[in-house]
Length: 291
Length: 317
Image (cartoon, rainbow over all chains, first blue to last red):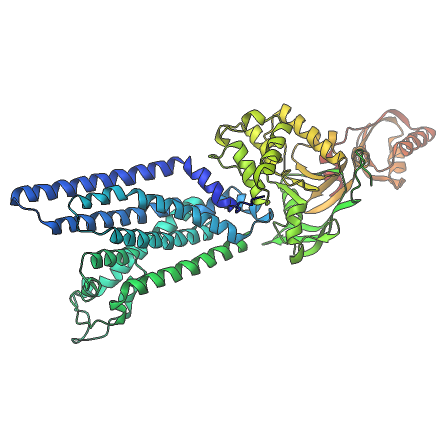
């Protein structure tokens, strides 16, 4: 007799439920509509430039890829808190969390089931966005391996965000509050870290670093937690700009590069994965504690 | 104990001993004792906020007591090593429907079978069997959002039966249930109890449970005021009702006699009309009447009022 591997029941239930959810359908529709409109606008703009100049400029294709990939990343960042933000809080509100726990299912299984289902949704979004990105292949310039690497890193970023949102939903009692807290946390990661990074320059117009070759100030390293910066760095490296992150940190500065700026992608991804894993453990603890 | 169907079951399935649970300054359970014999249909009744739900949650392990013990088949439910066993022993139904609007009826039951570790064809068969039992087999593919509230309550009840638990803890199961569904659910409960399942339920509607429950526990402010078989509790209810007398002559003597009677708990009178809280049984009532008449008191009317669980609760507390 063949024993099929048993699926996580929470994951299975989430899949059944999400497939019929109006929010999921609307999110996918909005995501594709935005991707398609932007792709069309960028592509037609590129064609008009070619028409005016009378010759093909292949760097425009690269720009189009960068714009579309960044739009895709931003859309994923915007959609994930909406989907994952209320996960645990909603179960708690309908008393299903307690029921599941007294039925013998572990808090780990509940949280991992939820995480798997949200990751599933994120991967569907990332992969289904590929037709818009495939417009680049009309003229070429980007390898399949670049596309795979970009999608993989976006999936890792989605996992990081899902863990943040699950934690926010575990510490909230109401699903509405959980979604607000999730969006707040993501907004801080994206906008907050950028604001801190530019704060000194914006507030006092002061140049970073007292003298040429100064070490990078600690608060710029908060950008390591910013998934948008990580993804932008990946895209820039794919486009051939190797020193983007240092240029960004050293904007109006006197800093000298170091091993962190040279290995930014690896370090930021490792750090984000570590933070994600810690939040996952904290979520499980919260689910157990707030029983 | 041997049930009607010949199955042997444990004599005492659920016992709560001196359970105390305090949340902030409020006692949810204040030295609560409960004894639900095996195969019994036990109704936990009391006013809203009296601690019925808390008692069930303490039994189900959803709350840990500050002190006291909860034993199911002799196993302490709050010991770490018994937690796995607890999930097999208990079927818990909440007061609130936990259903997911986007799931089909059959998917909802299947989800919980998977949670209990039952997969494949046998799990599906069990779910279909449960739906058939409650007459919901035609609604197997209906989305829960399209199911009536009454049917959703039924489904919640069926969910508790998936893993054949020997103890069901049902919090207000008949709330929002239509008459037909309620009767059917009561039939299922009676059948399960006859087969040896112990069912402890709470209810806000006392007449619903008085009719078909074997044991009744009356709870007030986290304490068990009265507990026993239905007949015992009915007798207590009867005894908690006051005696009404109309006395035409010898009122002063009657007052004197009634005050001297140790079974008289309280006495209120207004001219000819007397209301007496008397704790004696029917024979003692006859004796009291005889004594009053023998003493030359003109008793023109003598009868017990109709008691209720609410009267008993206020009388005992």
